[in-house]
Each structure stands twice: as C-alpha cells, then as structure tokens.
Length: 84
Image (cartoon, rainbow, N blue to C red; front, top):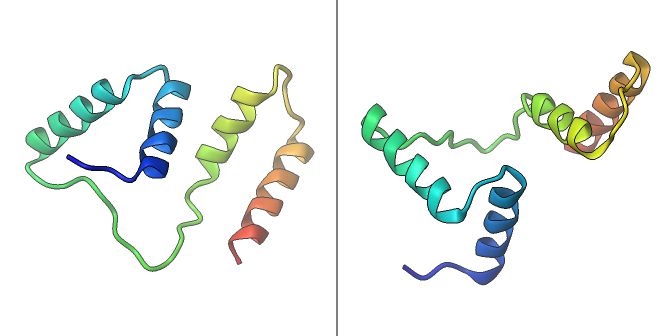
C-alpha cells in the first residue's frame, strides 16, 4: 500500500505520542472494523466542536502542572475561535 509520506509521518508521530506503533494502531483499526462490521469514521463537511476533550488531553500531556479553571476556559475559547 502506498501512502503519502507527509500523511504517514504525521500518523507515525501521533501513534508514538499515544505509545503505539503504526502496526498496532492499524491492527486496532482493523479489529474495530471487524467487531463493528462498519468503517468507524465520521464524515462531515463541518468541523466538530467536540474536539475539546482532545485539546484538554494535549494540554495535560504537555504541561507538568495543573491548570486553573480560568486557564482551561481561555484555552477552550481560543480553540473555538480558531475554528471560525
């Protein structure tokens, strides 16, 4: 299978940040397809605002300290503005 190098590199980086190899991530995806008997993707022309949990996960992973509620709300506000 041929994959664009930039797409592959980004996928590999994400896998590594989650503690996975590309092979293990692909195996998880294949098992999910088999278990669900469907392709587990959401296709949309609009960006979801449901990515806040991902934003909070990234914030927690990148900062060794706890965030105040005001800091979290500011990050959420900034993120939502970037979606517009």
